[in-house]
Length: 422
Image (cartoon, rainbow, N blue to C red; front, side, top):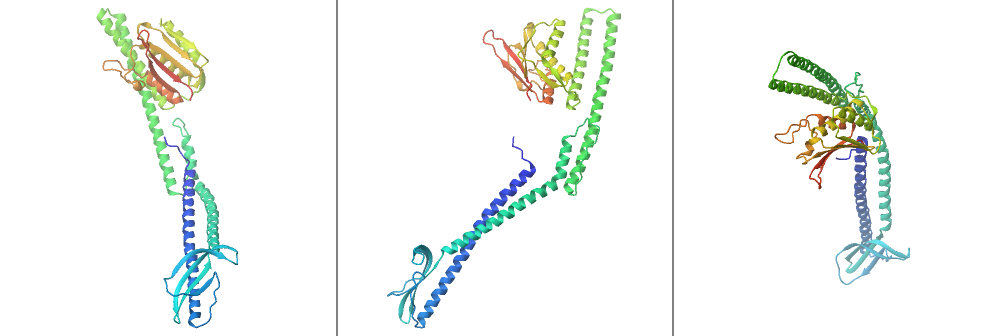
């Protein structure tokens, strides 16, 4: 998952990187442009000095050499002109200096002359660096000013968006109050506000309709189920029935109870999805498990043991806590054969339930899926474990399952664990 960055920080980072690249590129461009300009000026000065020396020789005026700035010598042969940088000793500075040198050969008044003129380029380099440094300084000052101005301006422009975002974070389907959004003179933000208001209003209406539909369906299903149950009781009490009819009626009663249970669990899942469980209390899971085990013992289910390595207390809705423990223990009882022992272990931050099993599941990752079937002929897991997962997701708990094989008797263990650390 990519790391998320705030909008202002993202835009500021882009502004900084863009400014840095522009500063570097402009400084490099200015450096070479100024250097080329200064070099052209130096060469122009050299050509001008050489022209004056040549004019003086043409007029038969005496030209004196002034090393290292100008030197005039007579030579036997003419050579091509040479323009180059050279390092020579400067007596006036008593050190080696960098010069730009123009060396030409001219035939003037039937005499071959070697004319060399030079100019010091060290000062031009100093000027060049001063110009570039001044440019960088001005650029940095302007950039800092523009950066803070741009950031402040962006915060002002985006303020309606951030305010509305905070309002969206507090939006609740169960709240009767409408969401209050801030208007903006920016067209896109104004349109966004209108669309959010339309969307939230529609979502609220749909939520209320769905909630009403679920409650109505749940209520309407309970009534015919109760009537069917009452009629079956009348048949049993008022009419003589044979063994086959008794078996059929008993099967019908089990199906009725299963439908009631299914209806109750679907209603519970819907309420969890709709965030209707808002009652948060500190629930002692350790004591709740002990109470559940005692209740099961009253039903002659005595193969459940509980060991505690610390008090397990969790902040959640007490009703959902009761459903969570009941579904996990009931699932272990349902899939434990021959009344083999079921071990429940609690620590200060986790709940572990172990029940025996011969084989691991083929698709353990689908165990918490609604009505999942492990095999073609196996009965589905129902909604019990799906409700467990939904409760854990609602509170940020972590449910897990693993199979631990045994090397002694070949009988392994199905291990369900709930980690209550968020």
